[in-house]
Each structure stands twice: as C-alpha cells, then as structure tokens.
Length: 315
Image 1 (cartoon, rainbow, N blue to C red):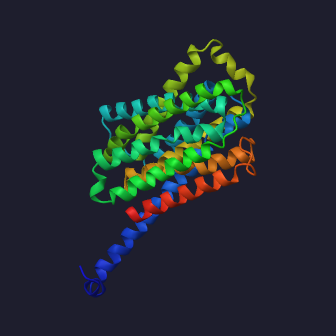
Image 2: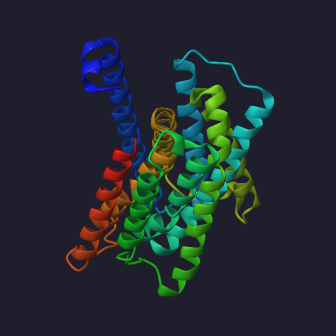
C-alpha cells in the first residue's frame, strides 16, 4: 500500500498507530521483566539465606502474589487438568533451575552467575523463531543478531565478576549456573503453549504450586529439614517472600510481552537482566571493581544496547 492511500484511509492510519503502541508496550513489558528478574534474587544475597530455605519462602511469595492477581482478574477458569498439569511441571522445572541458580550465586556471586544463566537467551530465541514460526512476522536475522549480542553482553560483563568465594568453587558455580540455564530454557516451550490457551493469570498460580512442591521436597530431604528456618529472623524470611513477589511480577510482564511482540524478542529482552544484576553486584556486594573493569563493562553495555535496538527494528 502506497503512502497516499494510507493518508486517504484514516482507519488504516489509526490501526497502524495502535499496532505501534502495542509493540512499544510489549518492549516496555520485556524490559520490566528484565529488571524484576534481576531483583528477585537480591534478598537471598542480602540475608545470606541457604538456597532451599530461600526457594521455599520465595515460593510462598509467588503463590500469594499469583493468587491475588488471579482473584483481581475475576478468577478466570478456562483450563483443563492436562493444562494445569503442564503448568505444574513448568513450576517443578523452574524450581529445580532456581535451586541451581541460587547454588551458583553462593559459589561465584550474583554478577558472575547471572551472565552464565542468561545463555538460555539463544535457546529461547530459536524456539520462538523455529517452533512457533515467528520468523513470519519478524526479521529473523535481526532477532537472532540482537539475541546473540545480548547474550554476548552477558558473557562479556560476566568476565568482570570477582567471586566472593574461594576460586576452587568457580567450576562448580559455573556448572550450577549452566544447569539453571538448561532448566529455564526447557520450561519455556510448555509455558508458551499453555499461556496461549488459558492466559497467564490462570497459568501462574499452577506454576507457583509446582515451585512450592519442588521447594518442599528440597527442604524435607536435606539433613536439618525444617529446623533450618530457625536460623533466620522473621524479617529475612519476609524479604524472601518479597523475592517471590518480584519474580511473579517479572513472569507476568514476560508473558504480557510474549503476547504482544512474540517469544523470540521478549525472551531476549528478559536476558537484559544482566545489566541491573551486575549493577547490584557492584553497588551492594562489591563483586566487580568498576574502575578496573570499566572498559569491559562499557563494551558489554554497548553490546546490550545495540542488541536491543536490533530487536526493535526486527518487529
């Protein structure tokens, strides 16, 4: 359609404007999910909570937040038991990934663990482009290039990570972070299918139930069991609940972004959580000495920005 026909057709012009606004909104939701995905593990580091206790407390926060959102939206009831079971499995797998991620943070720090975990970005992009055929509505080369740059930014920035634990823990920490990446990538496909059919308001409580099941099994099978909760004051456990709130906000934002701009782009945007995670690592935990690594940090930041711009032009 030529420009003159667009001008002469006000309905078409309004439709294009609405589409552009929805794409912008989708990008904003994607960036919002990145910020909250960087935020939800902070209480564990600040409170020095062991990963099983943290995951259980966080799981309670996820369930409370998800159920509140579910009730506020009128308690939609469109799911079948197989769909609920798939959502439950997503929670089980995610819980396993978060146990691995928390173990990685304890060994190599937040600033270094996050970039290795975020290598899952490439897998998510390929799932969106190939399995869900999003290459038909996006520029696949720009999406793939943008995703690669964002993952590269994560790896570049991650090289600055100065672990706050002995060096011999590094190999195990990286292994746990890569295990978390594999778990996070594996729940993505069933999540996309179920959310598309029943919506994320109904999906999230069932996924939260799966997280709690994984966390409960982890708590009950450890040596000290539930007695470990006595090692932490109530305020620390309450902060872990807030971690669950942050994660639920991140997941709902990601799901909204997927609906608006597709999985391949939104999942890549979510991997931008490396940037705030490293910022927190520098500011709060002194895991990165910024004056020493400013060139590497700048290079990683530029790669992340260029990757995001490419994702913007891909839609």
